[in-house]
Image (cartoon, rainbow, N blue to C red; front, side, top):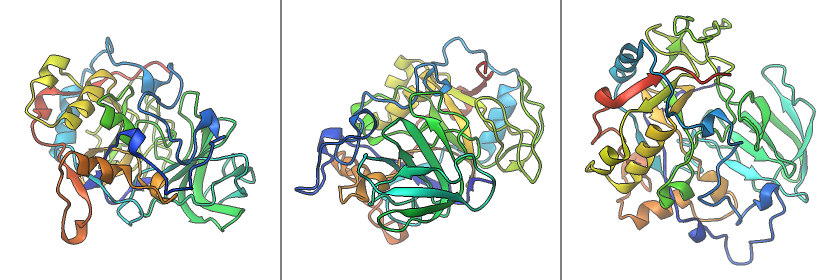
Length: 362
């Protein structure tokens, strides 16, 4: 069961992509997929997966689920969206999905899964020497190969220096230019890049894809309808397209894994809110593309942002922290020293505007 035990505060942040630099002399001509690599990270205009992917399809015209109000009531009974936190890269608070773009010269690793049978077992892939999994218990890591295959891992436990065996609990792969579904490292089987908000997007003020939603838990029944698949057992929940696996099961008044949420607000309504620009950017994406329930864990309802570890592993500045400082945020203290809190809950009438949509057709 791939769920996040700590989701009260998540991981957010942003950056103007041009300001994300490696230490002097460290940059090189990237030869990874689409020319991406350390120091040549994707810009603000790029989004993973094909235009036809469910994560890149606008929500306009999609019907509202007939039981939307009840589902929203259940979701918000756990609380409004959790605070997003920048600056957790390299710490045990990092439950996000660091992404690495492998180069043809990177070391070769043989893949070994310890938990369940995996279709990628025994395959050999390139992985940057500096690549590290997220520091939280989930230990997520994603490596995009030069040929466009995105390899997603959950609970990476071993990655020896210079090549060898990359050991993880569960993993899978999906095309970075495909649908972004049917991988294995999240409860929903979404690709690890699905719905993650990148720093460059937030800094640019536009997010052109759906968001990744984490709920406390999801329904164990097929009462949601619209092709919902039954829970496979073992405490897992039911799921609906684009999910192909369930998460942690709970009160059956919750929606299933894969359900699509949307903020029913116009651009003018969002623009009129007395909230920071970064929040309007996130809200606009939620209104335009919606957000898919992709994992379970934590205390309620939250979104997912990229992990700064994908940058700091190479000795680059954490773009999340850079952006936080650029907009005048103050760092936290105590256990949260050096981090920056992004309040998602305030300034929005979530009970009035949040709704659950009918799933897109598979």
